[in-house]
Image 1 (cartoon, rainbow, N blue to C red):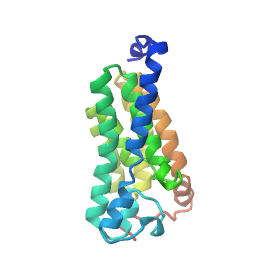
Image 2 (cartoon, rainbow, N blue to C red; image 1 turned 120 degrees about the horizontal axis):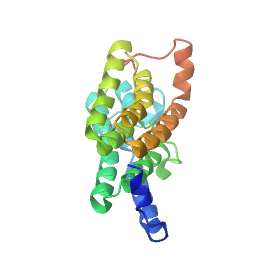
Image 3 (cartoon, rainbow, N blue to C red; image 1 turned 180 degrees about the horizontal axis):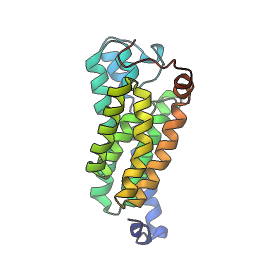
Amino acid sequence: MLDSLALVQWTTAWPYLLATFIASYFLGSIPFGLIFGWLSGAGDIRKIGSGNIGATNVLRSGKRWAAAATLFADAGKALLAVTLAEVWFGLDVFPVIAGFGAFIGHLYPVWLNFKGGKGVASFIGITIGLNWVIGLVTCLTWLGTARWFRMSSLAALVAAAMTPVYFALAGENLFAVLTVVLAVLIFYSHRANLQRLRHGEEPKIGRR
């Protein structure tokens, strides 16, 4: 996997890598949660619950279809970025850059003063794009944890922490490095959730 880095001629490839990052950033920065929140009649979801634009907070508005649409759209935009980079360039470093760009775009969208979502759905989309089998295992990890503990944030943290391990065990070292970085960012974006988890105050799934 890391051999793909050795194949890159950095003096000629860097403009393509930069373009991949920028295009993926803008794709990832589309605020689907905000869009579907308005379309569902929930208004500005940044004024609801945690104020986040992710699917979990959209669900707190009571608009289930909007939450589902947000989940799939946020995952889909990241998956699209990774897939296009893989198809166009072939080398593994390009989908890695695309995934990172889409993830940063989702967390820090320029349209919303760099205040976006927490990155869980986009993380899943990136993982599926890199390796659909491991992406499926990541989804199952999230679902299993969420079903057992009924807490979306805890499920996200467990899935994010385990995904680099899955990639490392599969010998996908470059993808493991990327998901380590993304997992760190997810933990950072969930820092308020971590505080509530420590104090037993984290709300359950489905609670407004």
